[in-house]
View (cartoon, rainbow, N blue to C red):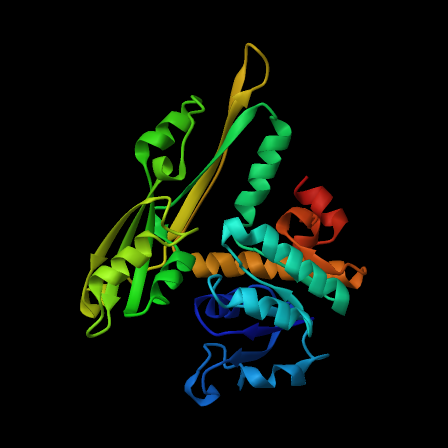
Amino acid sequence: MINIGLYGYGNIARGIEEAVKHNDDFNIVAVFSRRDPSTVKTSSGVKVYHSSEVANFVGKIDIMVLCGGSATDLPVQGPQMLKLFNTIDTFDTHAKIPEYFQTMDKVGKENGHIGAISVGWDPGLFSINRCLFEACMPEGENYTFWGKGVSQGHSDAIRRIEGVLDARQYTIPKEDAVNKVKAGLNPTLTARDKHLRECFVVLKEGADKDYVEQTIKSMPNYFADYDTIVHFISMNEMRKNHMGLAHGGTVIRGGNLSSENKAVMSFEMNTESNPQFTSSVVIAYARAIYRMHNEGRVGAVSVLDVPVSYLSKKDSKTLLKELL
């Protein structure tokens, strides 16, 4: 049995609770929150502790699942928790992954723990496919399209802006760009060419609308490089029309096999619940890093470092028979 803790209680944590129902080799020991534990009710009935009590669980938790956001939570919480536990997180600020990896790798090696970073579908499963496609067809170009769907990381980044009560951000592929790539034309595309970002924002009373809009549109790593539309709506409209968390995307590589022959490879996923799908991936990788740590691995790892067979509950003999 793999004993896990959940640090933070939001969409990812609730998704982990659901995923554990389908993976009977996991047990959730505790949930840790910065909020008053008496105000947090878990769907699984697991007891909630204040985050200040987390050190009391050293030796009782095999892997701490870090459920915070990438904008401000994980850069701080990741190194802190890795000093105490093996960890896994969903850090998704692509431009900062190398820096975050180096920090986590140093902390993990100094403390004898393993930390899996940036686990999910992108970064995560899409990262694997980009690597796989490029290795199999070196002469070509990778393209990644996200959506249409709600980006949890981008929505969270907006909600942290002063004056914002709630927000949803939809990532929308530009159809013309997708069609060119699928046709094998290998166009040169900027981030702005590929996606539109559409934001729906509920303001707190008295908030500065112009400040919020300009802060969103100028936010580096999130919106500055994209065409971004901002709509200000009421909380009633938010609850009525924007509470779903569906998402998806496609990785495509077009390239040359020879001077005469081309090929196009693709991987596509769509989910009605972004956090639940992400959490299902996290659980599979938690199983893998539990095995890797038992073999002596420490430091940071990404999905690119994990053997695929380690994700499965099945033994190698069964995998060879059923899946190879």
